[in-house]
Amino acid sequence: IPGAYYSKELAKAEAEGRIDFVPWTPTEPVSTVMDLGISDSTVLIFFQVIPLSGAIHVLDCYHARGEATAHYVAKLQEIQRARGWTWGKHYAPFDVTQRHDAGSALVSRLEQWASHGVKLTVLERTEIQTGIQAARSVFPRVRFNRDPCRPLLDALARYASEWSEERQVFALRPRHDA
Image (cartoon, rainbow, N blue to C red; front, side, top):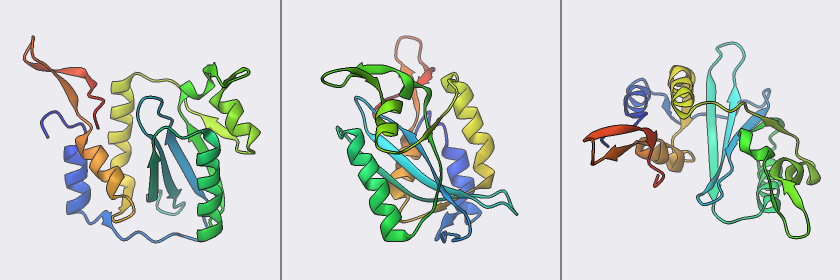
């Protein structure tokens, strides 16, 4: 895909066998990182950091659109029961602290998750290009569990720069159709 941010990293991961069956390591907690969509999908990515090697094992992902916080909390609980995972940290983007109308009050998503018993670790705000570079720098340590992570791998492959017809170049911002 022209302008795709992670095409080289994904091709290298495939060539090196880092997109394959990745087993859960029962001695290590499973953490999540999430993108809490408003007009697009909310995505939960389940991963483990393996201490001896520093490898990051992406075990699974989940995405849905238009669901309330309670839905995602229930999904975490369902996955934990079904798989026996012990949770590590739940990472969320900086905008989780922004307040929005929740019917009778203005609350943040951070407060909504906390009201369901889930403590989120809020990531610092960075420029989009800085975040892309940070992800690229981590890619060599990442192994993806091929089948469960297929939606994530497909989305990463489609994540690309917006094309500027006027200037005939790729812009420094991503398209939001992926």
